[in-house]
Length: 421
Image 1 (cartoon, rainbow, N blue to C red):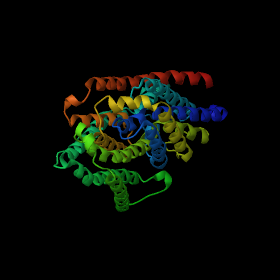
Image 2: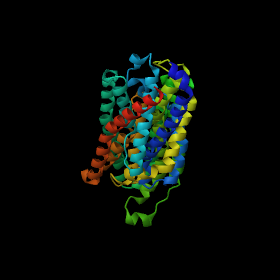
Image 3: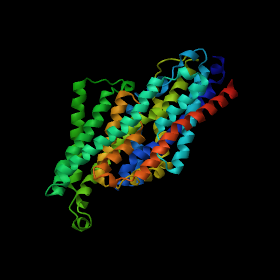
Image 4: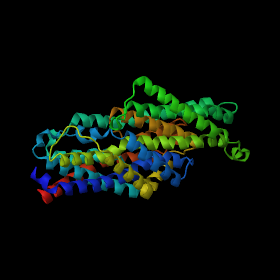
């Protein structure tokens, strides 16, 4: 307790700096994954992706980002054995933030799409094993998270595959694909608005003190979906047939119909990502703030101040703007050739999977979901449409992330303990 009282301000300052560093890494790596499909399909430019992320990542983190944070903070380790030594948890959370942030910076500079969830989970486990003991790790919870690493890409890929097959049947394989695209386009935009708003409302937005019944949530989601579909209908109707482009690529005009739809999905993916993955950066930060402000109390639950959510949003947007383009190239063009219709399916599927995960409070990996969704879209054209070598390299980068995060966190934990102990 004395250590907390003496160095409380320093711990808070370090937590803020490390938290910003970590959320910068999330922006540079995970957000780049989220936006890569939109950029890779040619629907939006890198600059437009940064602007969209600046608005909707921030909105997702600020409006709907409060639910998942608890899983990272208190679900993976049991801090009950160090209730009388709160400084141990402070060292551990600071070490975890710094370890995960450094690994994300290295990976982003190389253009490797790694998982920020893997990074922070591995780092928290690494500190807990050396700082508290092997028994302190909730291995059952870790097992659930590990299962989600398999489930999330499979789910994202399956939804993307089904969406792609529906577009093929309803639009691409019809007598007049362009007219079919204009007719069905607003329905796909409605689906997007309905899914995003419904799951966000179902989460209850507890930290904003906003609670709606199931019926009211459905009503609001339908209204939001219809409004979005109306906007989409107006934008889609402005698209004209381009005969010269159709000579080079039979579906060129159809793909132009999907371009404004891709803008909607990019916004949705940014919002979904902000609501889910901001927890990776601000969870440990919230834990440190809670312990210091309470004078050393290791509480099972802590209020999440809005300024921490704002901090997370700022860090994420800065990371994407400064280094996100490297990972965007990998995810946007390396796995399979994307067009606006394929990118739409991949992004909508990924957004739906992310917000569903956010609804349950399970910290899934946006990287895995995005990659799974892009693979699902590629498989709709056959195995030959995907680059298995690129996928193999991505999987290897995933496998080394958790142990590297754990090792770095253990080193930083002992360093901090030596400095302040």
